[in-house]
Image (cartoon, rainbow, N blue to C red; front, side, top):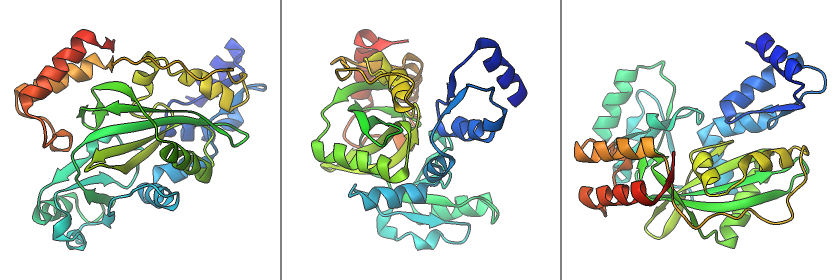
Length: 300
């Protein structure tokens, strides 16, 4: 695969290659020696991507810059009892943060979590467990340049999700204090290029969920609203000049129609994953929101 990629880059005269996510970025980094002369690697350093891959490192970095982080526990086969009963229901995710969001699972009781850990076996990777706080997602997108400056910070709200991914997306206000802390997170991790921080909006607070490099959960939908992610990536690596004005993000709704239709079907069948359920909305109100976004949203 590396040889075919190098041949393609040489044949097209590519001046650089980038990655849409951390997994691809780490693979490209390992192939750097095979890139043709004159073709640059537009990805973060390996150490920065490794830091993003570990959920516990993400949690520690978020807490260090002042973001609100829920109580966090790392559990293995026989350690379900390390999570206090008062924290349930909980959401458990793989320690590897590059694993698909669909692997997140909600457990209502400690016994349910213990049963899942026994089923997985002693050799299974550990899980990161946090209290489940139902709420909308606030996604903060930004980019950090090779010179260390953070730019293009914008916030987007996803009121409904399916397997943790937005059904639709709207621009949202970004408080200056939150913007500064998100920038500090990117600086501390030594990231270069586009990034995304996800927060759960619950009980009037923004709880840090996870961080991602590249497109993340909202990159493609944000682009439909005018967020110029490809341009920001080139600027970050010195391959394009920084535009004189910020992105003109439309005050509209971007829709992932495939996800929206599957979300609607799950609502009708009463089979919406527990991690996506909201305690403050009925199925019919959520269906009405889906229909409104399907009719009026910018989708593909």
